[in-house]
Length: 164
Image 1: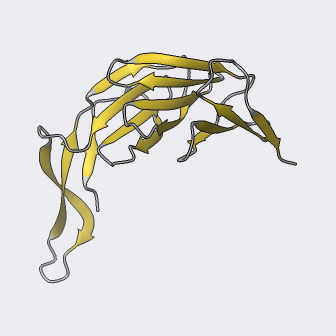
Image 2: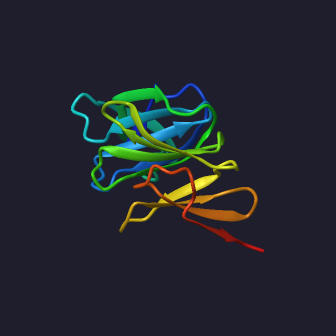
């Protein structure tokens, strides 16, 4: 059942989404490199009712699903190409993003400020952040997984894992 619908944040297809650890915010990245942040507890959200594909057995009438419509609190250009992965840091103020532009970035969301950029040699096709440390794992089209320590400002990955 649809609970919320996020609208008006992107002008191209959405490539990734991530919900913050406390489930208060959502971040989404699009194919044009845009990043949007959504407040999942928005006081100004509008409640809507939309028809579903199901019909009620008893009356034969169309069933309706109630959901809220959310608009983004923040939208900005984060990368020069498609954002393929995003993850929240534990503090819920910072987001890590990966992109087809070969970069991994750490963002202060409220200030829309890039705090760190790590450039790789390959497209980033997905990413995941360790819940226990500030290590980011990225997947790449060359069948390689790279591990990055985002506490450092050097431009080198910590380790590479290659699959056959």
